[in-house]
Length: 384
Image (cartoon, rainbow, N blue to C red; front, side):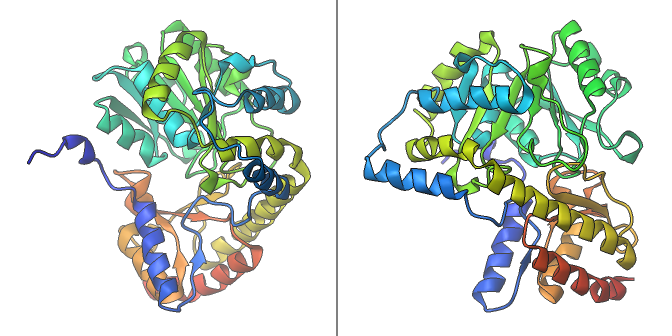
């Protein structure tokens, strides 16, 4: 029987690391979870209370495809409160996590054979979803010399005006790097002049350490903005995200979403309205991430991991491990087996040079991060 080649895309390695870590836990051994980009905190109390109320009120039917009107209005208010921007709620589409938002964007904006530039290292599912859709992912290699973000010269080298799209995350996964406001404006101007569709992954907005991050929504109504309740709002398993769409993509996205998903989960939608009123609790989470970040930035160099991404936002350290290995897959497998530390090999984010890098998530408890620092030293000594 025939099987489509769409499923022959690369594996999502972090999920395999999670599986191996779960098997270790099931065997009664300890695991320090630094592999997955998931807050260790539960959803805000206000969201939990709102979900219980929605269950009591039996608010579990389908919503409109573009989302429950009350939630779309509250997301629009968020742009006014957080960024000082006026975003019409009519341009907002609520999605089943940011994953559905990326799929809908790629389907609505591009045809098979179109070229969309992404950064390397970068979130692997961009490349993999495009591959399943026969969209060509044009990788732009970025490194410490540009703070793991692209320059206009790099865009030109990647094809420039021949590109159909450009996708940039700021803050980025796995490096934590951020585009400065002037850099974002320059790139948006370049895309506008060359008719390149700009897609802005903003799912780590709210989790920054120092400079505030700018939204592409402030500078270009033709950009596609993608955000999520998973990271700052600590609602990963609720599978809820949103898009701010340009006018010309509203109808295509609605048609696609209605056929593919009908609507995002109604319980999560009704509960998520309360998330915007839980800023004190959520900012407390970010304060903990900041402590964890400072701990790793201080302790990792002591054990020989002294080269890593900027970590200006999100909750990751993307560490260069070439001093110890060029096989991050084996390195992470041995580290889990010998120390109980679960981390993600850079191969997931960079199929060319990722074997020399490991991503450590610091979204867990400070106690776990401190314990991981203690266990890393002896392990790395054994790798020299």
